[in-house]
Length: 275
Image: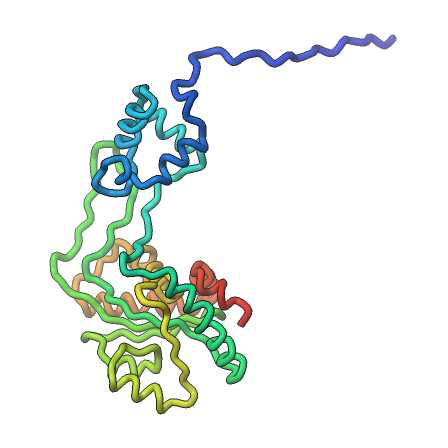
């Protein structure tokens, strides 16, 4: 014997609970508000905090909401709390576009003609004062990390290619033309370096647009080194820091997959990707 049971039919019902406080502020409107510099609403800087958003929402929409509500709505709108990258006032986007039109074809032609390896070069100072990393600790008990109070740094040069090759050199003195010449890399603007470059038939040098460190993939190498590899380091002297930095860069140079990932995070890599 077969017994048939009628299927239950589900009907959509209205969700119980209080209506949303900010029904007039949809996700697109909230996103538009956050992407507008806070300075346009009378604040001294362009950055948004939950406190500023609460104040502006109260003024614009006439409602008072909690910090938790603001945070929830921000996440629902696909927004995250991020540290911005620096962009210089002196930066010219017109000069950048002109560089793409005029210099990029010359770079491509030089690489193809000479079957060359294209490197991006940069210099940096690695500070003895370590960047501190976050860690877990009991609520209300801020952890402490012992660091040196001495001042000091290690000067460094490096160059990275799209294949994941990394060249580097550490120095115990300020980087000048002689050091750049010895490194056979992109020069500082000086007569001695310019003369050297002109005499090297196998060395072709192109300058990135002014005030454009974000267009240099090698800048990402230093960001990774300082913010990942050396974060919270325990070096007490410049000698210890130099040894630690050398070991970290050596390990990075043996990891082409990591370096290719670092290289292709830069927009310039995409522009020159077909080399």
